[in-house]
Image (cartoon, rainbow, N blue to C red):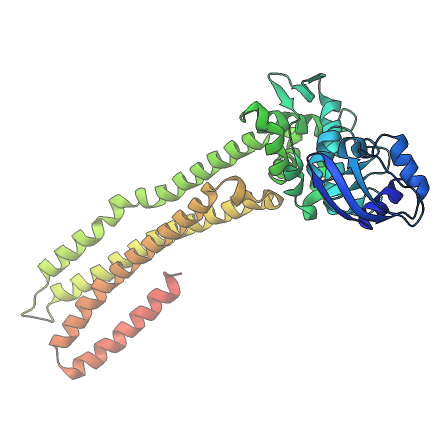
Length: 393
C-alpha cells in the first residue's frame, strides 16, 4: 500500500506545510488506496467525490503517514527510528527512496544502528531517559557514560568510502570475549571520556576512522598489553633516547675538536716566512698533515657511530612499518632532522680541518720558484693520494 500512496503523491502537485501534506489536482486512479487513507484517518479533509477519474485535493496528516512508513525528510525518519531500524518497508521523501532500494544514506543509517547495538552489547547497563537511550560501559579502572544522541546530519557526514571501518568496529564489539574486543572497549573509554557527555556519540561518528586506526595500532601489540597511548609513550621515549645518542656524538668530540684551531695557530706562529726551506717549516707542515690525518680518523669514527645509530633507527622503525610511526610519534621526524644536522656539522669540521693545511701549503708554494713548485706539487699529489687511499673513507 505504501507504494500506491507514494504514487498518489508523485502524480499530484504536492507541498508540505504545518504537519500536513497537500496533494492538489490528483486524478483518482486507485479508489482502494483513497479508502485506505480514509480508514486510517490519514486524510484531514472531507472528500465530496470519490469516483475513478475525479480530480480531488487531498490533505494528508504527516504524523499518520509516518506511522505507515512515509517520512517527509531524513530528520523525521531518524527521529522516529533512532535506535531500531523498521522491519517494514518505508519511504523517505527527501531522498526519494524506499528502504528496499540501494541508497547511501540508508546504508550509513543501518551502520549506525548496528554500532548502537554493538555498544549496547558491551554495556553493563542500558536505560532510556526522556526518549534518549544511554549506555554505561565499564572497564577495570574506569567507566564511560554514553548517551546515543545524534541526528541526520551526523549520518550524512559519514564517508561512504570508509563505511567498512565503521562496520568493523561494530563487528568486533559484537564478538565473544576476545582480546581484540576487550582492547576496543578500553580504547573506546579512553577515546570518548575526555569529551562532553552529550557530544560523545556525535564525536565518535565524526572521528570513527581515527578511532578505528588507533584500535588497530593497539591491537598489534595487545600481547604485550600495549594501548595506543602506551605505544605513543614508548615511541616518544625511544625517539628521545636516539636524539640524545646523536647529540652525544658531537658533545663527546668537543674536547678533541678544540685542538684544531689551537694547532693551526701554533703552526702559523712557528712558520718561518723568511727561510722557506728551513727544516722547521718542513717539519711543521708534515706535523700539520699528520695531525689532520689523526683528526680525520677520529671524525671517521664519529661518522661511523652516526651511521650505526642511523641503521638502528631504521631497524626500529621497520618493526612499526604497518603502524605509521611518524603519525603516532612526530618526534621521530625530529630525530631524522637531528641526525642530518650532526652529519652536516661533521662535514663542516672536515672542510675546516683540511682547508687550512692546504692553504698553508699553497701559500708556501706561492712564495717559492716554479721549478721547485713542480717537484713539490708532485710530492703533494702523492701525499694526497696516499691519505685518500689509506685514511679517508
